[in-house]
Every structure is written in structure tokens, then in C-alpha cells.
Image (cartoon, rainbow, N blue to C red; front, top):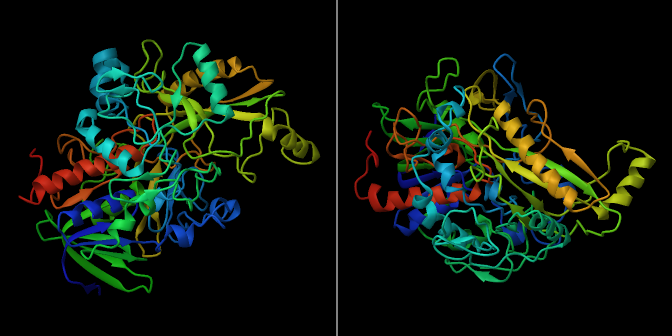
Length: 588
């Protein structure tokens, strides 16, 4: 029997980026807020000091910052005619664990989506005709526009101290920035990071071919910075340990380095760690969420009532908790009925490796979002007529740091082990680089999340089951932009190149990106989405579901900036509208 606790104004479930943003905004509104987090407390000086933070074995290979699959995992299959099996080892994606979530180990790649990304269905139908979207492609418009989110993108970028160069200021194209981006109201808070040799070479070759390369926008500090909350960040040291690591230099934005120093001092905020939410409880009408049941580290079960519940867990856990709580109708890909679990999407990537004889590239120098990018083939920045696909991605050189255990560049034909392999690594490590693609994934009827009928977790609940594979659309798109990358690579005049296209079925084994999206998508009407345009549940008005679970499909960019912008957009509506008159913010 769960022990029932005293009710509070707001309960936040999950304490990564969106949880920290939600708690900061709602405590500023004068509400008493409790956040529960399944992991433990993590603090920058205690847990990520430079004395041991650059420990590749501890943090990447032994997964210090990531989920413990012995406690919580999912099952996976490529299609419905397969039997899903539990994921026993982290691979394709690395969900975060503990306070800060994946916001601790992200790279700091802080992109805004393109204006056309938010109207993917209507835009593509208007430009290419309805036949351009296959019947089994379930993409849809978001219910918000780029213009709606622009002030909230801006706010997060200034909280993070983003380093970059604007390409479009209030409709005026700016030299040196991304000419394809949506209009910005002001410049980035910090200038771009200093470029190292590999992205410089890429930029030179791309310009020679007539393209418009620009510096990657980064939540890595190019100079000392104090954010609007008064929190100070330091300049990046280019140590190369951003991706999959914390940052002890206060140089990479995370909840710990931007928001928590202010939030944790507030008397109207309480954080409870090692508390795992297992169910959202509804009243007898099933139109109101009354509490969340959670289990603490000792195994004790509690029920925390709240007037307002804000779900801020990782996308997979948001969807899992909705399904376990019986909120909404689970999606059935056979009939197309139901919405919870529908439109799961991911990202598709590829690369071209380059090997030189006459250049020392120093790949160990790096930062999470240090790079030069071309956006000519992202979204609908190019004419798709006759290509047989929609969507796209950005391409470029992002020098995150060639960590020694992880990075062994070798040309084609090199043995996988032994003396020849060792010599090839030694000969090529300093003289190699990669140009990467980072592409969109359009939602499809068969790709979804649901509850597994066979496997259960430590609490006896069904595991989340993921059914996903790339479709012909993704393969054609990825091949097309990889061919463009090959052309730029040849212009860099390497000794040889190795083109690595994405072939075959999707594999959950090798790391790709932690950019899972969908399953509780937003829409302008309850027949098309789990949440409305303010991320408020269509069925339960006092339940808001923040995060990438709201994405109807996945554009080419990294999702974190859009996750944060949507959170600020939603919380602004809660503060300005919901608190004054609790109830639906959008009427069907």
C-alpha cells in the first residue's frame, strides 16, 4: 500500500533539461514544486571535476552516466513479424541517468529547426503534391510554427550562452552564418568557437564548390559568459571530452551549469532523487490526474498528489508511463487506431572518412559542437522533384575529439586486429578525419512504441517495446546527401576516402544518436495527437507532457534546442493562461 503524501501545487516527473526548466519557471510563478528523479544527485565540482572527468573507460565504455539496463530496458524488433528481444547492452542511443539526464553528456549541438520542418505535411504537399507522401508515411504538421517558438529558442540559447553566427537577422541574410535558417530576433550571445584544421579544410572545399559553410552553433563557450539567471560559465578548453561526458570546466551548458545553481536555493522547490515514477493516477472520471505513485531507493512506495503534473522524463519513459497508466488509446499499426506510441522516429547518419599523407590534423583537439556545416541539403532547402524522397540533413565536419579507445581510423582493406591493424592506426590517427551527415526520419505506419506482451521490469510492469526500421525514403535521402559529401571530400584532395553509407536494416547495436522522438505527438486536434499545441494532454487537462515525445517526426537537426523551446512555450502558456483558469488551453 502506497503511503500518501501531502499535496503540492506541481509535481515534475524527471529532472533533466525539461525538468529543470519547468521547475525554474513554475517556482518563479510562486508555486510549490516537487521534482522526482529516478537517478541520484549529480553536481559539477563533485562528479565531473577535470581531475577525472576525461576518463573514457569509466564514462563511455562502462556507461557511468547512462541508464542501467539491468534495472530498466526495452525490447526491440525491426518489424511486427519479428519477436522483440530485450536490449541487454546500450548501443544505438544512450539515455541519461541521474540529475541532469542526457543534458549532462550531450555535445551541446544547439540547432533551431527550419520553418518548413514544423509544417512537414502541408508544406511538402503544397510544393510536390500529395503523391510525394506515401500512404504509409504518417507525418503531420506540429500545431506550432517557427515564429511561435522563435522567442523561446532565443531564451534557451541565452540561458546556454550559445556560440555561433546568425545567418538571418530579422529577415536579413548575414554573411558567415547559415543562410537557410529561420529569422532570428538577435545575434547569438557568444561568437563561434575557434576552428581547428579539419573543419577549416571542409569549409574551404565547400566554398570552392559554391556552397555556404558556417560554424556549428554550440552550447560550448567560446568565451566567459554570465547567463540571464546570473550563472557564470567558462571558456572551452577544447579537451575533446564533451560527447558522453560531463564538463568540469563549466564550459558546456547543462542543467547543472545553467539553471540548478539558482533553482536549488529556492524554498518553494524540493528535489527527491532515487524515486522512480511507476504510475500516474487518475480520478474516477479519468479526466484529471490526481497523483503519481513512485518507489524510492529502499523499495518504499509513495503516492504524491499534485494539482498540476508535468512529465519531463526521456521520450521513451514518457511514453512508457502513459501506456502503463492507461492514459490515451495505444496505437495499433494494423488498424491505424490509437495515438500513444504512434510516430516513433529517430535519425539516420552516414559518413565519409578521409586519409591524408601531407596533413597533420590533431583530431584529439575538439569540443562537442566544434565544426563547419553545410545546410544545402537539409529539410526542404533543395528541390526534391523526382528524387523519390522528402526530408534531408546537414553535412559537415564536427570535431568532437578523437578519444583514443573509441577512435581507430584505418583505410579500407586493413585487418580488424593484429600487427598490421596497429600500424595502420598509428599511421592514420593524426592524418584522418570524417565528414558526417545527420538526416531526418519521417514517421511511418509501422514504426511505433507499445507494451511488450512477454517481458516485464523489476516492478512487474510490461517493458516498452520498440518497433523501428529505416524505410526507402530514409535510405534514398541518406544516399543522396552522402553522395554530396563525397564530392566535397574529393575536393579536399585526400589520399583516399572511405564512403560509409547507411545500408540494410536499422541496428540497435552500434552507437548512432540519442535522438529518439515521438510516441506522444502534438497536434492541433485530439484526433491527431496525444497533446495539444501547448503540450497539454488532450484527455487530461492538468497533465503536460514535455520533451521530444511530442515530435510528429524527426527533422535533420539535433532535437535539444527544440525540446527546450517547446518547454518554454508550454510553460509560458501555463503561467499566462492555465494558472489563471485551469482547464484545456485548446478546445477541440
